[in-house]
Image (cartoon, rainbow, N blue to C red; front, side, top):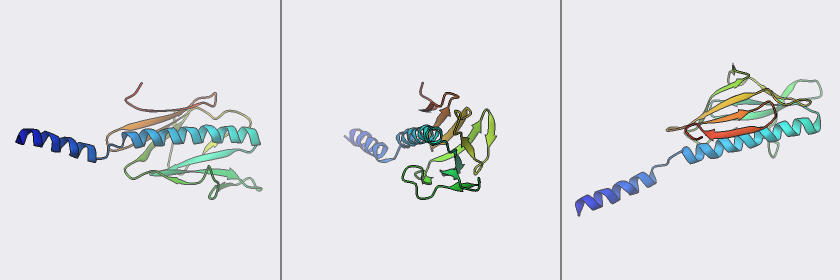
Length: 145
């Protein structure tokens, strides 16, 4: 009887402990869709956009009338975003060259974005967001095919 109760209690505890793989997968998919849409928006409007990472979030940028990059703060879609607790951005690279947090990744107005890779991390898993030279952006947990 005690063994059965111990197993049942162990299963309940495992169920209550959050597994951030689902959140990580969701955040990677969200970022992939945002980046793909930002690239399409840049090409459709003829105005470049940019993206930058922070340790626990990201933001989008646009050029003002003077050609300077300014942060998008109040945009309904491309507003600054903070990842849920326990998730972060480990690394970003464009054409294999690393970008530091805060450096801009351009989303070109007249061509597709250069290939890029973004690594998101959680407590027990990591995920990748990868952009191709065709403009397509993909996401996946790193242990999935």
